Image 1 (cartoon, rainbow, N blue to C red):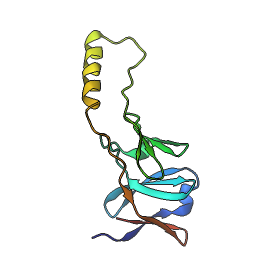
Image 2: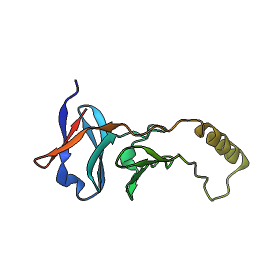
Image 3: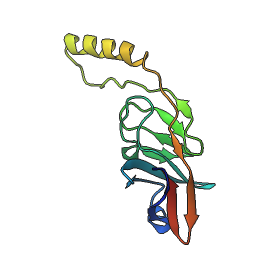
Image 4: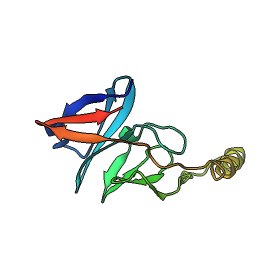
Amino acid sequence: MSAWYKAADANELSSGPMKGVEVAGAKVLLVRGPSGIRAFEDRCGHMSAPMSTGTFKSGAIKCALHSAVFDAETGGVRGQPQMHVPSAKLPPEMMEAMAKMGQIMAQIRCESLRPYPVAVESGQVMVYV
């Protein structure tokens, strides 16, 4: 049943702009941006990696797995996933496999992050899930 739940104390986000929490069985990413606290499903819109393991910079959330970038205010896609090829020389069969993975990844649609309604009341971050 959907309802408002306490996700964190607002001061828990003062030491960093992002925090992954579990709220009523849902994995939620809390983000503190210039306009306040936002809440999203803690799952990348590309391949479901936890966004809480990523980074936050200049109003954007970057996935740690394939570097997809999302807007921290809306959850919209700002940058498509990328496949990073290591700079070390790899065996030809490994390079061939990575090239095939890149072709597959390019066909996987990257969706926006799912937002949750959020409110801050009496120093508590409340999320509607």
